[in-house]
Length: 440
Image 1 (cartoon, rainbow, N blue to C red):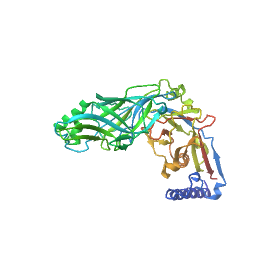
Image 2: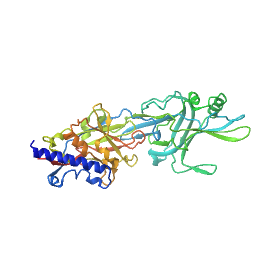
Image 3: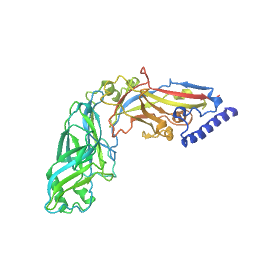
């Protein structure tokens, strides 16, 4: 390499670095121009563009996702003709709303209610399908400092209550004339309430540590598995969620609420079955990777992720002589999916590079923020798009080893939204569009 050529490469890279730092602290440059001014104007005259880079991609089964400490908890069952069925359950501790609890003289239980604020419903929510949830006492202790996954078992003890209902996210709940956010209210056995009152008399509600050794928590498990079901997302962390005992004693009518908050250990459990799912999906996750050339299947809640790799990317490069002006991965949705009206697409997807240990790692382009990096569904182009300029540059000239990428649904442990995507040989294909400059 002669000195003039080396000087031009180093100048271009230095200019790109300075501009990158400027972009990081300024919002004046639009997303659509990211990378296009990484070169001096004279070099842009030599810019080339390609969208024919080879892509190897296919769906893979996701064994589990982490489900503890999530912002919402899921329960329900539904069957999806493309992806099969899912049954979601969850468990949680409850905590005292005050120490040294005293229910007074001769307390009598009027009712016990587990109340959980609704967050959303996914699946056949428009068909008014009835669900049945059973509530059980949690048989074993769970801990806030432990990690729990979608395949972590839930040990259900004695049954506390059950409810058959139609999810209703519109009508408020009224107490003493005061409206509260819509909530699922499951009546529990009064004998359970009496056990709590007796525990208080024995000093087992003096503090949370003592109480949690007596009552480990509860779990919510769907019992009916209908063809047309739905998945209910519950905001268990809401101030409107908890477990309340309504009672009266010799002097007054009262209630006492056990809280669900950040100090409570909790996690979700998902049971998936691919029986009855679309054969192309099942065969793909079972190893026929060639099927990914046409259609790809992305399923959260321990369903399926998508592997992506660019095996012939180095064909662009010759002696470290390429500067990437812009690289964008465009992933169209499969518009032939007639089930999308019942099972809507995800609002956004996430993309991670795979490191040398096979784990997900951040992509360098994420330094500019998620709004620039991409992943949000674009209803106009019917696609998801990611900016990968720095990542592609690193693969070509930065010494980055290509272990591939993992494409996932954002919030894969709390959202049910799934999607069918187009592969690289589809008529409307997944493609990597690269604008680059060849340094001579």
